[in-house]
Length: 319
Image 1: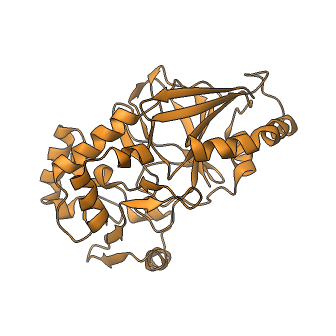
Image 2: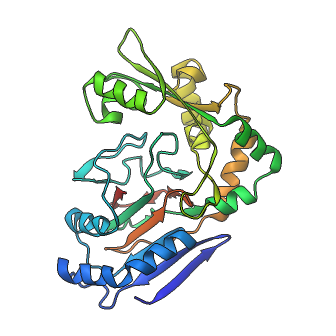
Image 3: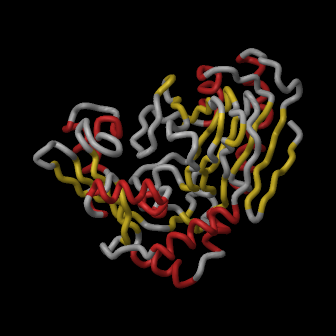
């Protein structure tokens, strides 16, 4: 596959387009194409952080699952905070968040004890307008951060606070979040994750997880920005929604989710806005085409979603 590079700021996406782009092909042909380029894809993911594959003829969730399985074993469960639906084993809708809002740049499941090394997005139907999946380099973001802001995050870490209802209320339920109705399974997972938790009288679930704000990549050894502090904070929502949610919750501690420094002190909103601005400044994106597959290294780059119009069908899988 010939390689092109899309670059914006300090972030780049390698684009690999197969001969016969747009032809459906069969599984054997697709596997042969992947086998021929897999070493290059692996190298580019560690260097660029994101690779866009075109022309593999993927038309459905089954074909997408086959491609992802070529690079690793797909996650079978998703225990994150984004609303999404399972469509096949190890394949979900990328997000069911309302189309009219952006989703800010973040590292998937960086609030958890275990996170996917890679994410794969597949376009089955592009939207009429917008709907891009931007990425932003976490190495460049950390290097460009105000030293005082960086020091606060590195020294204190991030505490992720969640209030998950038991079936009725704002935000997600613990059943949807952990894909089970069994409290025992949830408790076992949280204990294994070194998370503090408590059940309320209404059988709602309160969770507190303290994680580092930065981590070192296990292969490259590079230190990267790796957290979801700004996305967990209510200030990431449109102002009218943030105000309504705060009024409903009564306090920040009662919000469906929020973030603080690991020592419990509040994160200044100016620090969060600085993080958002750096992420936006570095983002790189492209227009989705049917059959596109975007592979990203979840530690090296953040990802998000732009608002869109029309129907959009983007799937996600994780390894």
